Amino acid sequence: MVPKHTSITEAYTILGLQEGATSEEVKSAYKKLALRTHPDKNPDNEDATVQFQRIGEAYNAIQKHLDKGSRPARGGPRRPPFGYSYSDEDDDEYYDDDDSYDDDYEDDMDFYMFMFSEFMNSHFRRGGYTRRGFYSSSGSRSYFCEHCNKHHGGSPEPTESPEQYQARLRAAREEKEAAAQRRIQEEAARKAQIEKEREREKKEAAARQKKKASDKKAQAEASRQSAKDAARQQLQRSQTLRSEVFAAARRGENEKVKKGIWEDSVDAAGGEIKRGGEEFVKNPPKDLQETLMHLCVRHGDVDLIEWLATHNADPEERNKEGLTPFHVALQLGKMPIVEYFFVNHPPSEDDYAGIYKRPTSKSLIDIAVESREPEAVWAVLDKNLASKAEMEKTWKYVTSKACKQSFIKSLGSLKGPGKLDEIVNLLVTYGHFSLQSVASSESNGHVNGHDDYRTSRSATPGGVDSDSVAEPESPQSPNGQSRGRGRGRGRGRGRGFRGGRGRGGPPQA
Image 1 (cartoon, one colour):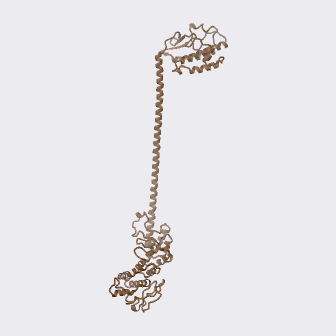
Image 2 (image 1 turned 45 degrees about the vertical axis):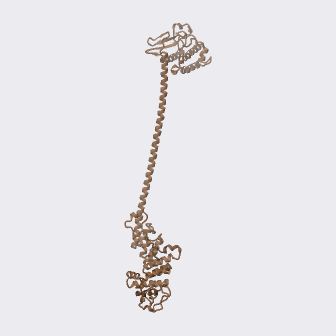
């Protein structure tokens, strides 16, 4: 309960003002303190109600003081200060007949009375019975009953006991703690949800990254496959064109060969089947290393050989037997092509040694003998492409029965022996071999495969007795003409190189 008497000085102090403050300053200070100390805003403060009432009493005292000094007394009903109600014992204690207020003051007091009664009404209720109580200036308290619409004096029973009040405070604290716990749980749930969302986004990002990598890999694989297919198609087309050019070369269709190389970009070097193109060739060749130049040599077209040499063909390439195009030309007796190689690729120069290097299986003189053309043998001997040992080996062969039979079988009984005679004479000239040793061998019965050679050479090719045939004195010249004749009567019918005359048969023993 607030004290009965509050001095003006104390009232100003309670409101935090200095004496002499204006009415507006008093109202402003009161409103701020009333709102701050209102019991409903301070449920945990047991002294809030007392403080609120003290502020109201201080305000009323100051207002009363200010009104006495500024307003004349008027008749009419008197009203108690804010926060108080009438009682019989209050009539003469603080108010007299001169204490009255004007209409504005009454309006302000009505507002504060209503506000305070509403606060107190919400704070003190009991069942269906509501009381509104106010302190009088004497310290007694009266209550207003809504049922009878009258004030009742005295001190009614409190609406709640101390235990109930403590229970209410405890319930409020528990509710506050529960609310705090709920906030903690909600915050934890919020954080958990955020973490869950973060994990979900992380997984989705990883899935997107994985899908992106997978798509990129699939795209790269598709690109590789596309490039592989394109390369395969290109290889198939190139191999088809190449096989067509090789087929034309085998048929001797030189213009198609040139067209394929020039217009279709077929490489003149290498064998028919390109690396990786085996599956596109229905009928593979027997010799996979045989080049276009090897094939064109067989037809003896010197112009095509020269054209190929200027369009990337390599004259040093060898077939499966180890033969270069020159070797094939020598073996087939294609002398214009042999002459082309000698002129454009001189065997005396080291840069062209690969063209003339003998294969492992046979010597160049052996290859020339296989052509059965004395001119081919002369070309090898004249260019010093045969060693002494190679000539000795060839000499044994050309003076054998097997060689004679081979010539007769290939060239006939008339032409074959004549060609062989010319080859023998060339070996006698360049290798300095003696036919006398062959005749001695026959007379002693040690023919070693040469027993028919004397019979075939018993007379010169011209039909003259061999007794009149002398040993040759000099080799033939490159133009095929003999530098000298035998000293005997026989002139021989062998042609030598390009129509040159033979030097007669071997002398008789």
